[in-house]
Amino acid sequence: MSANLNQTNIEIDDPNFQALFADLQGNILKGHGRDDSRHIFFRFTGNSDENCRWVESFAGEVTSTLAQHQQILSYKRDRHHQLFVNFMLSCSGYLALDIPQKYWPQDKAFRSGMKDLQVCYDTLPRGDHSPKSNPLNDDVQQWESAFRNRVDGMILLAYGGDSARETRQILDDKVSELKKQLAGIAEITLVQAGYVMRNEKEQVIEHFGFVDGVSNPKFLFSDLNEEFKNGGYSRNDPSASLNTVLVKDPGGDNNSYGTYVTYRKLQQNIKGFWKKLDLLANTLSELGQQKVDAEYAGALCVGRFKDGTPISEQGNDGWSNLFNNFNYDDDVDGLRCPFHSHTRKTNPRGDTVRQFNSPPTIEQSRRIVRRGISFGDKNLNPDSEWTDAGLLFISLQASIVDQFIFMQHTWCNNEGFVRENTGIDPLVGQVLPGENIQPQSWPGKWGNGAGKVDFEFSGFVRTLGGEYLFMPSIHFLRHLSTLD
Image 1 (spheres, rainbow, N blue to C red):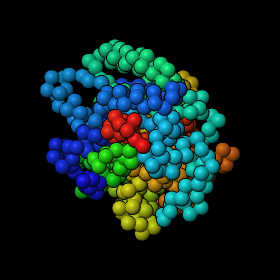
Image 2 (tube, helix red, strand yellow; image 1 turned 180 degrees about the horizontal axis):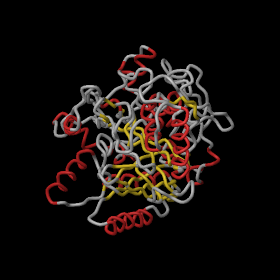
Image 3 (spheres, rainbow, N blue to C red; image 1 turned 90 degrees about the vertical axis):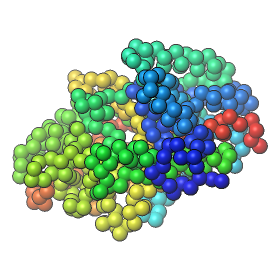
């Protein structure tokens, strides 16, 4: 019998989910937890029978949700490090394996691929009423060649050893082993290294210096319990049902589920970002009603200060570090946290309910599960702009169209969301090449509607490539040759 995907707050050892968790790949319901990874992109070159046999043999190395939990217990018990492995395919990967189409994932964006700019995506009923092609506003000609060419799949390796040298050696050795295994089967087109950065408080950050991954949806009882300890959830429910991220794997059995993957390599202009923040701070100080610095201006852009404190949460006693237990009920006009702030654009926390009378469940259903990691130079204060540094954005969702594309196109890139003349998301929002960007409206004083300042802020993150993938069940990977 299939699992009930409406459930949340699940115990990892719930006997009703053991078969599902044994077949479901790890890193979906809970992050893999390692600080270093390799993303290995490949293109099949062998015949379909050879390709399938290799995938079936490699399936034994893929880490299931249940195995991931056992790895965690093993590490807590004796600090035993183990390699973590994910395997995912693009639509062209299914084609190269000669999988009958009835076993292909159904999502329209997955079927089209991220490079396709012609397909229109209808995000009704509360999305774009005039859907167009290229909803991400990408310029694919600016992508790296590995992503402009065909991508059949990606293998994610992750490891966290006792030293950086050990970690690097384990991952490099595994990549070398894979290259040998894939000889005559597939060509490795890119090996992308990723790593976790942390601040002095050991919080995970990205290259602009802000805490990252604070408000991911929570599926498991243990993670919700941890959230409760860190501030509770009286004003924001972080729980999510399994159907936020899981879909039935059409090539698996009754207990087989998978997830859709959005992969984006995002380069960050660190120097340019902070230079523009200085200009924004000076402009707000001159034209607004309070003196502010670049750190405060950055919090207006992101929606949080660098340590994760929401900019919307200020009281008579100063800043309140609630992290995730907050909403915008006391900031309905965007005078504390601007409507265009990144965290508010991507997680409106009730704005669509107030503005459009949309049921809260619809807004919550747009959430994505983020599993990104940084890449490139670790210098957060570079001398030049557009260095080799940024984020390997990975989101998991049950629908690319209704979650990732909706969020990027209808919220982040939409100058009219959540109200007219809001402007685009200052971090990841982008308009079509050649289009003019309207300035965002910034509060001249926190919580005060007087003295708003118009200032255009955008263009400090650009996409170097990406692809839509599917992370199938382990059962599917092990039984490719039996599909007919």
